[in-house]
Image (tube, rainbow, N blue to C red; front, side, top):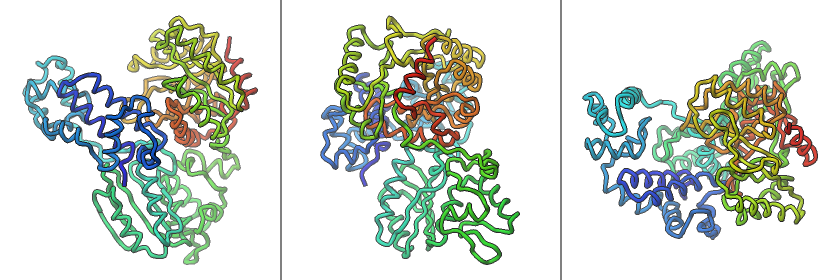
Length: 567
């Protein structure tokens, strides 16, 4: 099986880490970092691109050398460049990079000054007071390292949804192709579109379970078979993701799918409802005494307990059962409802605009907002980009391109737009891109002041979080949501897999407050429009319907809403 995009990115990140520890050329290091981010963010598999004969050098920042390494990793799982670098350093040194507070530069200092290459050696040096004397460390850093080293690694490490998809979807497709398999579905938190997943639960219906078990355990990405029985098995993939497989009879498929989709709290609450009706629900079906009364489909399970079907994304026991009983379940937004994207930022506008237009048209979109970076464009470059958008609009091919500009929200709440005239744009997108650690009151005042700007339109990735990398800002989000509603501005749900920001709980607050959400891809390449599916899952978890999402509107209705944001 070819390496996934996530696998390729990990190899490139490790190469960059090793180069940085070795104090190699900064441009070379940056090239690998950028390539890792690009490949990980692609909406299509690099392996599939190679299989189709596509030229990877057409991707921004990917030259012949990097393209060759991508092919090497796809075919072998590694590349010679990484293996050569590994020989120059102790094998354990990269484990230090997993310790909070340590980056490649600090690891380099620890290795060169104190010959530290393992967490155990670091712990001993910290305890002996040796680390505080090193340049760039000090007593505070030493104390933070001691605290981090004292913690155990979390047993429930979770994978971002998009990373789980890179491994889970090919595995599901592999199982679906086994002769005799009828259904192959990923259940669990993955099906509920949680932003991270701890493991994957796969369900299969097939007459010959033994063949399915054998083929599952022989899957090329399996690193360890933890258990294997007649109808269930558990494996760990090479990236550490655990996968549980169950082969169930067709008559029980719906009950098993319901049971293993969860959540546990939702299932417990539904079982209580069933008990009140003298019914029992388990993974095999719905029973009245020993007689099975439902279970072949999920719909039959809900019908047996006199509930309407509840979408998987809502099954968290956060009010969905009460809404179901009251007949007030929301009609959730669907991918077909999205008529556009209000935040795409092509890296090379003139070279990639046509590709974006075609990709959006294939998704039956009616508009795209092309977002230009205020702080990184010279006046001549800006005018050239705006002219390119005008020319594309003149072609009149069923897709309207809106002009948007991204500005930083300064620490004092002002919009850092440089010399750019904000009146020239349909959309002004503001974001917090610095000073993430401000106290709650100050961070909230900062954003509220930005919202007061007469040309402010869209608050991008509001909490500023990066999953597994950066905690959200300490921000009074409900207060910001109310202020946005009063100002008639929009809040973004950024669909980039490492963001998925606005979080689902705040999407629901926005729904209750009547604030509009824009589900945007944040795409820098056309293939990244595919990320909208992750944002959509987050929106559905937040109970959002089409009416709660601004980019479900027609062009005319959207323009009216945009005009209303102007003071």
